Length: 79
Length: 256
Image 1: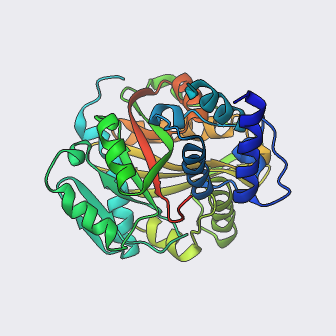
Image 2: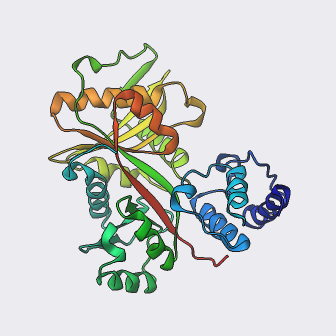
Image 3: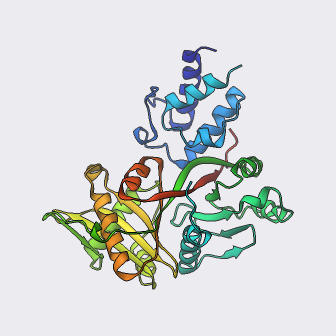
């Protein structure tokens, strides 16, 4: 899966969680989206793990601040 | 991580135990975990703690039963000792990690540490209604949202011995907050928040330095706080040392 494909899939997940029409870029952070609270953050992590069949290490999770960080992690974990 | 004695590390747990008591929350304290049942959406939300040993001890069954019974916390705290063992166990229970705090301590406060307040800055303990409302507005909007703390709760918290609230005002308007919790062995700083429009101007740093001096005048006890990743650098600059990491978990109620 290319980086663009990973981003597109994460973008679609974000729109399901934060609402259709939510504008996402790799630089988008929690502070940019009103609905990105701790509950939705947890949902986002769990959904991305399931969709890409990956598990993030706890130390990786706490360093995530932007959508680009999710893309990097999924990209890194692809076999 | 620095070698900080155990009795200093527990300020966080003592703080939430005390707040739960003040709020009249139903609490259970077990060897490996404790729980206070709260009202979802209301502060305090950090109402559960788990011991690093929970993943390996038989009493974890009781924890699992509690989780399954539906008496669930919104958030849970695990410390970094054995976190690689605790994390899979907590995930099995339906909890996912989402953030971490760095436990930080200042054990020796320099005598010349007192900051000089600029003429347009004052630090007060909010007593009048207007100041309390400003304090609550900052805490309710700038900390992990959404949460709700009202005037009645604030009043009952700060009327307790050992707990004080402070408001830093810039040009007469409240911009930064702190709540201090003093035990026999340490002073904890909580609810450190700065209004978004006033961030990155040094107000939180000034308020923390002010509290450090106030604390040093009263006792030689160390000062403890729990920093987010973005706040850690500022506290290191002030002389705090990291001693532990606390991981925050939320229960995932909706299956992805």
